[in-house]
Length: 168
Image (tube, rainbow, N blue to C red; front, top):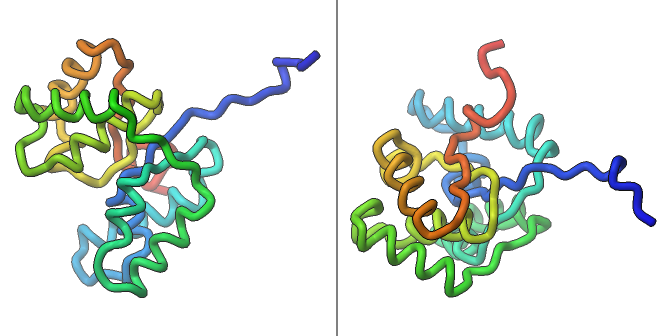
């Protein structure tokens, strides 16, 4: 018999491609990008172990693009992270997000990231994408569409928002 009191269930974090890109990129001279790189690195080193991490084939495909050496660095970061399946439910949810105008046409991959995280039961969707995923207007609209399909919407947040005190 398994003693359930000793089993620790960690919250599931779906890591969207932008986080991996900030982690693996060369230090930037742009102050905003440099800040996001530093926060991503700090989260990766000090916070990620508190969570059950997941990616998807979409994340792997996106971080494989571009410079081969940079892609290799990005892929090495996620090689041991299990991948969520992009199921029919995921695709259907992504299509609905696009049809409802919650995610703009042309941003199908963003809709798929949301669909993966929601349909596969992630607690958090970790992203630096403030344009189509992690902004106040989008989040409330995303929440409504996801919940209307019977899923629990993951908390959409950046590494800065998920754990740790970055002002110390």
